[in-house]
Amino acid sequence: MADYREMWEKLGLDLAAHDGLLEVLPPLYQESILGQENRPEGMQYFDFVFSEVHGLRIKELVDHRAAGGIVVGTFCTYVPEELILAAGGVCVGLCAGAQVAEEAAEQYLPRNLCALIKSSLGFKLAKVCPYIESCDLLVGETTCDGKKKYYEILDQFQPVHTMELPQRKDEADRRLWREEVRRLAARLEEVAGKKIDEESLRNAARVINEKRKALLRLAELRKCDPPVISGRDALLINQIAFYDDPVRLAEKVNALCDELEERRDQGISIGGSHRPRILLSGCPMAIPNWKVPTIIETSGGLVAMDEMCTGIRYFRHLVDEAAADLEGMLDAIADRYLEIDCAVFTPNRERLEHIRELVRDYDIDAVIYYALQFCDPYTVEAFRVQQELEKERVPFLYLETDYSSEDVGQLTTRVQALIEMVETKRPV
Image 1 (cartoon, rainbow, N blue to C red):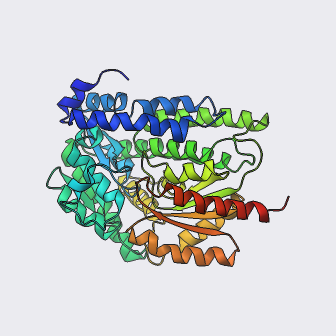
Image 2: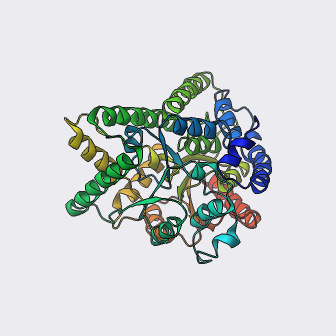
Image 3: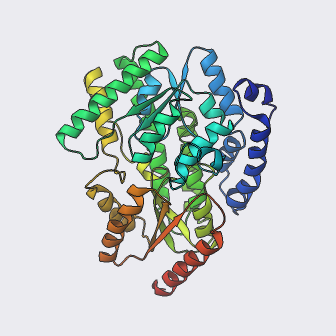
């Protein structure tokens, strides 16, 4: 990586603390990602992006602001990227996938709050996240009580716009959400000093849809058995999709898919023969959270699909680009985001049906439910998911954990037992 220290200092980072963070990441990346054998050549781009996660991409954000653009940070899949792009902005997902400054965060937040929220505030307090320090505006959403109260605290450090997300999907909820989308558009116009017009919004919808289509193409290739890509590499790509340039990312994902199709046709696979195919469901996994996928895939399984916000939930729905005017485009964008089946909704029948669909389409042998401690929506909804899977006689394993490494041994033992059980039951 080039020398970016002057840039980081201007952003207000604590250079000593930031150096410490950068020392931790390479060994973790080597163990979880680079240690895999026979990876596709197309993964080199994503390895490079990760190697520059606090370098070149941050420089692009700094240059974008210097040219008059804005940078907007988000925490969730409910924030419409199209609006940010149409306002001349760059949308970036924010750091929240590792234990950072936990004690400092607990000066503001209760100890029994999920690791993701504490991590987000920890990165801010420790001044080690160049993404949040590059942002002109942070956009939150009321996807749980912890997050919506956290945004009140975060707003004391940096401007935050919070979107009110309904908990149901009736017509009254749709009207509320469409108004929330327009309220965000107005706030973005104010920050950017630029109006969002029909042309810019239509073009933004096309760009983000192309990114989603590329990720959907990759998701389709994950149906191959033997596999042509590991679950860890697929997760890495999805994580990078939250902060990389969308046009460039779509181009690189499509190039990777071209290579994967050739490897499939030539009989080249990752890991050789069939391995137990796991659907990983539950809470999102922000960079550098690869703990559970690494345990699964080093224990003999394959993460064949991720039913989570850093998986297929992020890109499975497209925006209808056929709307006649600006108001129609805003409604189409709002309607697309309301289709997301996050556990915050009640009832949430769509999610249960989608999990059954994924189990069938990806020839899933077992579901591992990943729950962050104290994440109420996903920990509570696990019961309904398990009920549905029991009807289908699909093995189910519930793992509740956090960002620490203290429980790796225990989790590994439970995952290995599941995989052994699946292997003994699968027809030869």
